[in-house]
Length: 92
Image (cartoon, rainbow, N blue to C red; front, side, top):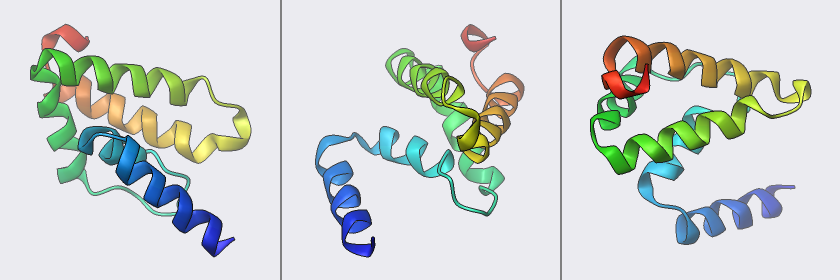
């Protein structure tokens, strides 16, 4: 299990952009909350058109997950709330 997780993390470092890695981190299935500063940083990145598209696409993908991934969905909803409060108007 540990080896599998390490292999996935290595694959993500190679194939994903820093923003995609950050989004995966803030919407992971871990049993702890994400710092609000990190959520606000992502919300500020919605002012960039390309970053905004990546963020919104990731959020939609997480929201489409099965209910077994409820933690990830909950964290995505938290990020959506922060994006609506502090992000670009184009995301509302």
